[in-house]
Image 1: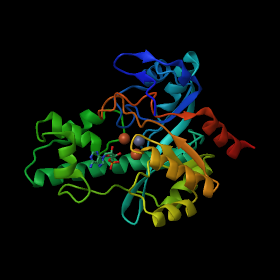
Image 2 (image 1 turned 180 degrees about the vertical axis):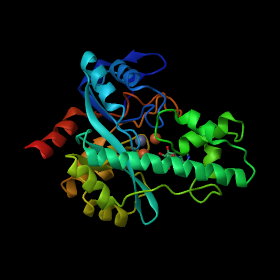
Image 3 (image 1 turned 90 degrees about the vertical axis):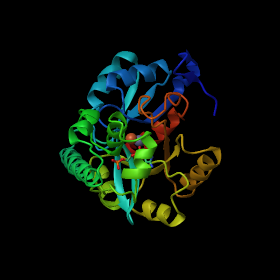
Image 4 (image 1 turned 30 degrees about the vertical axis):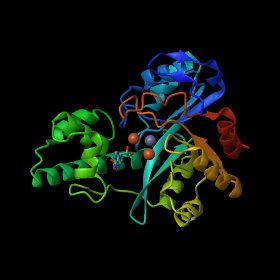
Length: 289
Ligand code: AMP
Ligand code: FE
Ligand code: FE
Ligand code: ZN
């Protein structure tokens, strides 16, 4: 993929103005940027449609839409949900739902509450193995956002309790590590139904190379509308593979940078991992015609 914008030099290639980035995070989950600042950066990167897909949180959407209006960027309602499939943590991206839908908002609030309880359990487990992390340090990292393991890893790093962010996952909080705790998750069926009743479409996020054929077909049967094809974790061959699956099952595709505002060594991804606007039009067609 050709790099069209460099966040460090600020060089812009306006050929991006027929491109969309449908996977972005803000301070409402584990991103570093406030919604309006992210919209500003997306504009500088030449994008014309974006979706903010915070984990279990739609709090950024109104502010982003407002900022988008003045800059001429369309903001599509989005969210990233976690579902459990045979104990595996699978991420779904949802788009074009009514972000004031009461049932959806109630569920998201419940997921965030469960995330907080889980953060408390993780901190307790860390303390039990003599890692003196305080919950407050985690909450400082999370701010207004949905609390997640990224905030715990950042807090461990900040407090000098881990050498690197990744080491925090490997030694303490990753799957199977001593302070690992599951989070509350819906089944794939329940999640796609929750999104559908709010008028939206559900996509399998970054399936990468770790999603087996059986898992893929189970998820498709659970009511997925599409698959995230373009993502920094997908090389060209992966993209082609998932594009093939999309065509085979009459699904839609989506894609984006999964940009966290530079928080995860991801300064270079904005404006680079994009999809054409037809992708967004295909979603609208499926929903509204
Ligand atoms: P949570 O939703 O709180 O379980 O956090 C999941 C997030 O943690 C993922 O979206 C990744 O950003 C991050 N993550 C999970 N496993 C790892 C890992 N082994 N190394 C680095 N980041 C990870
Ligand atoms: Fe994230
Ligand atoms: Fe994800
Ligand atoms: Zn994401």
